[in-house]
Image (cartoon, rainbow, N blue to C red; front, side):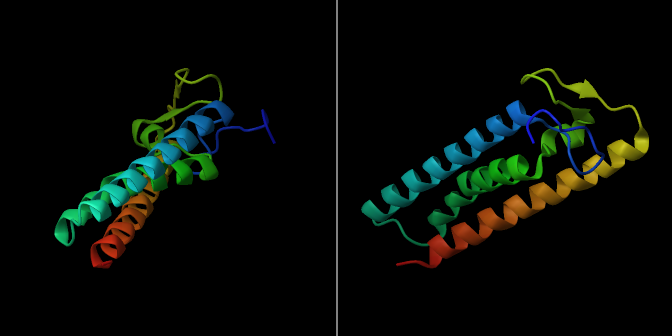
Amino acid sequence: MAGTEAYSPGVCNIGDDERALRRTAGWLGVAMSAAIVVAFVELRIAGVPRLVLLLPSSLAAVGFIQSRARFCANFGLRGLYNFGGVGAASRISDADSRRRDRAAALRIIAYSLIIGLVASLLFMAAP
């Protein structure tokens, strides 16, 4: 429900405006990934160079995961939260909350890198 979010350590640290920004980053990663796939296929570039897809596909994954989870990994690592307009982050003072946020942030980053790696390995193996 829009406007009813509240900070919850390790669970929720961003509101609607920040989530929209993460979705935009996700779509940017999708567009970059698609452009790389098309270019590499057209130029007949195969094998290990295709691992370059790791970066934009991880960007897509991290953007969409953060938006869906209502949790920004960057904020989680830095001890911040934001339920207002973009750029209006507040600091978290409680050490246990910061610890839980860091753990959630690292999980999101790990999942995103795994998704990016799988996408790039599949592309590398494709003809």
